[in-house]
Length: 171
Image 1: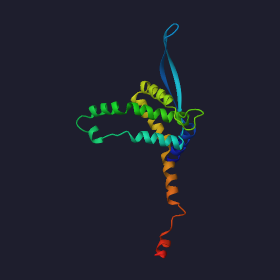
Image 2: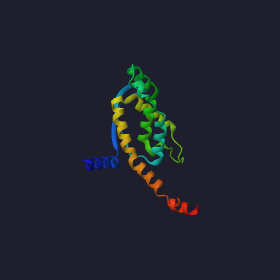
Image 3: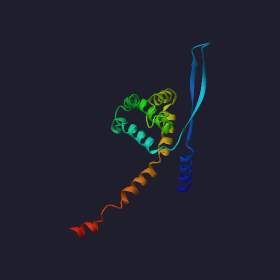
């Protein structure tokens, strides 16, 4: 069972998570009209810079569980939606764009307009139930387990760090 989960996670990370949303488009010039269009996006395993950017945005999201489970959970849920809906769409836009969030020919300069446009698109077209599904995919794609293990490996295998025996001999 564990191998099956590991294989599924590996496949998800390698292939990415593709999702589609239906967007209402309109043309106001030359015979005004409105139509629906299906747009597809793929969330791929993020690079370290994208992982860092998502983490920096996610840190700003706070939730007081005692208030959510308190006497007025519905009011707290409404306040959470008001405080964090735009940020959730922004995080999803960053995760979806990945390294494409940078301006072409401008080394590591974020294209804030492109991120804002995609954030607005997600804000107006993704439901809360779909957001849960997409954030589950983002968390899986972030592959935090491998990242944490990499950091552990670096932290425990420092070759320049003196051993306890060496420091005791010097004293």
